[in-house]
Length: 146
Image: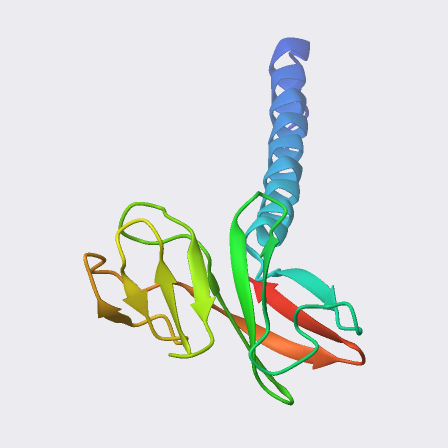
């Protein structure tokens, strides 16, 4: 191997290697942080069910907010079954309410009607409502927002 006789050439080579290592390290750190950004981390909303809760009996419903202010309608459809659906109509953004008689949800602004699985029954809405996974834990229902 030839010895480096010119300091400027050796310095540039050394600098190049150091900068390359720093850039590579930065790329690794960036990619490791990117994994957590795109990870499938769902927000969980926990709703306690006690005697004062609207969800303490079958047919009860309650609207809750996510961290970013979106509204979710949670409906108790059975002793151990809950449904969670967007509380914002896909037509014009009107509020969605549960009808215990029809067991459907509707928008009070323009009368769009939806099933609890989000499907449109009647318009003017043409797009179904987003639905969310629910899970029972002890004396609460957990809604997972992905």
